[in-house]
Length: 212
Image (cartoon, rainbow, N blue to C red; front, side):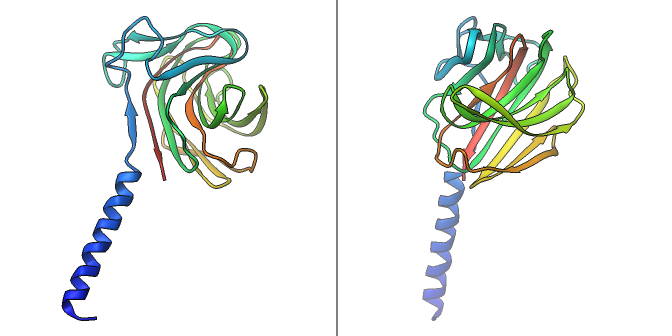
């Protein structure tokens, strides 16, 4: 290979790497440009099961990125909020959340590879139980697969992240690895989103995701 061919090959390699980086650039939703008092634009605010979830954009002085957060203040089996237009098979999803109150639960969770509001993977952290748990939900039925005891403080902001490649999933909580698990229930690409349980009043901010 002569010098000119070597330079050409190097340029093509740089272009290929740049293209890969562009594909994997993370999307960020911080809710700050959305109308307060209303469900988030560009999301499907819904639930799994019975009850009445209430998802709304609210101002909050404690928000990691001010001024707005996404708040869940209703009560349903599993309140769910799916990001419209997402379709990830491999990649990551991350959110900052703050559990505020709840007698039955004080949880914040992430959803990935969702087919709809009744079929998805979910990882969540719970301030009442002080644990991080991973599940799959099939036809509205949630099944626990693995859990790790970790301190989840109510009234404080935390970061939950899930990385998913093929059938392997890694959950981290506040920067620490919590769970690794492999499963083949949902193999296809699907939506990403946010989750709570029962009467959890939870705030969310800085929702990030990217495909590999």
